Length: 474
Image (cartoon, rainbow, N blue to C red):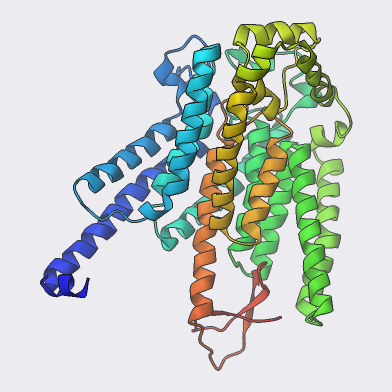
């Protein structure tokens, strides 16, 4: 390798480095645009613009979200550069997304041959889109991934502010639709059941994305006061969007992780006044804030008034009756869309205008056990790769919380952007993790007094003005 470099002129080496950086910026830009379109172009807005994204009778090309096309373009440009023998950054991280895409494609094609093409756009926009986005975003460096993280948190906070306005006025900024039906014209979906969605396609998507944002904020090493404000806003957003599973799951994961963290600090005798102050503030102020918002304003009105076993919860129990009505072929190879509607009527869901809520049941009905097993295996590999990329312990908390929340709704069983959002959040967290690793390997000390910043991975990090950030015990 040294001999090969010696034969090249200095300007040639510099030129190749510039070309590599230019290629990294251009390919990552497509991924950034894809994430931007996920936030700014929800399905409801596409419907308002006359694009039949969720309309069964529309053109097949219109049923694919613009973010999927943007990711595909970025991947094709990177592959074209490889074909031209150019160095493409991040190719080493493509292995697991490619495995995921291949496994999902094979399982989906097998299902298409067995039960038809009715759910083809679901697999493309829910699963393949996430794999493509992972490939194109992987071409960025740590600085670009951190930039992505800052953009994500800004977009999430802006949506939370919009949700407050929608809660107070009980008006959706973008009218919500179920297929071609306006939600305001569907009995029982407005009035006392009003839930804001801001710029998301559905309140449940909004809740899931807000939950993911909590772990990104914890990975960003913000100043204590700023981290506290942002986390409080995110908690209020979870209440506003009305996702019970998201609110409970996020709170439970953080409570368990925080309890283990404090227990370790106590055993090691490393408790500090700052840690005690942060813990007491979270225990006292967050419940007080959520209680005030839930009882004194319209924010979170639906969650407060529906925090019990409602029709949706009853459907989650009733839906499993469908398993008793499947024959052997349907168990092995899946069920057609028409047959699913018949089964839905037979178990009483259709009469109450309810559907299947569990994503794993929906996937089983469409894929059958023969295709579902390799499908789940490929999904597990992909999610494990995302968790490892985002780092321990926050990355695993992110992915684990997402799985728990996704298992309470049908986001993995229908066309939804949740998995693509997870990809963006995991890569954003990897940028902050890499920043922490680099500062730990080359930390410096300065003469001035330290200023505390928040870092959940090490509880308290000290930053001296005029020097690099260096970790320490509070």
